[in-house]
Length: 376
Figure 1 (tube, one colour):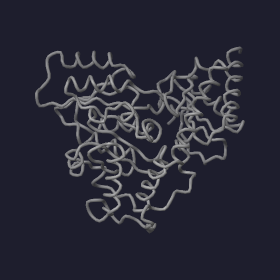
Figure 2 (tube, helix red, strand yellow):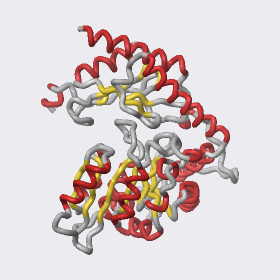
Figure 3 (cartoon, one colour):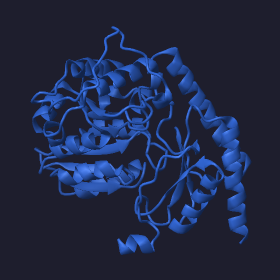
Figure 4 (cartoon, one colour):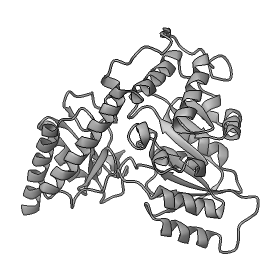
């Protein structure tokens, strides 16, 4: 605790603000929308689920939702969990066996790292988005050969939560296919944004048949709560028997399941199409203004709604975030140890409901502050 205080990295809860939103994951504004009623016009009581799915909490809506998810995302089967964190812990801790190996991008989310630590496989990280680094790592690990009973997993995100960039999914998928490795892709920040109707990065790249498991979450662009694993029927059955974060927790309540179904209904509608198009337009405005103001040298090459400005140093990053917040813009500082020391940054989350004027205003303030900082 004392060290965190000295480094200016001590975390504290903050109330929600009424500032212009450049911080939330509500990329399409679904959490602000009045969602439609269910397709059958049925009402769902705002009640608890009463137990875990394997005891008393397996409401019929779970089957409806999982069939919908599998169909929409082009998967054989889907299994719903209470959150993205629960999925990542439950999937990785269950499938990674003592004889297995997992190679993961150094920038994967903390929840994925926690899932790996709960599994029994030997784990190795490789450089961010770098297939040659993965190849070298694997060659070094298996220079004396690989046991025939071991599985090898490769773990990526289609859009990384801090950098906002993504890997060449096609290249990684072909590499895994050629070598008999199992590819796992976390699509948390791609669902609703990338691919046809927002089906995700794997869909956009046409790789559904080359991925062992996909993780989709509903707490970001979908504006709800919960998550799911997309994969084979046998994977679903295995997780129902061995995934502890699914087995030993109270299930999502029926109204939460209905909320997710309604969000997908909107995603497929003209309303969802308009929201996606507006988000893409705002991303284009942000990138153009960033370049116009000479800020592009500070920003990473984001491929979706997350745009990351590298500042460096907890104190300076917090100071710039406070400046923007005092000017009415909710932009958050991402500090070490969440990101590596020296890579502290401002994380801009873009939304369908941000206006071009808001985007230009916040970047103009940032550009002025960065110029002043350089001249000091």
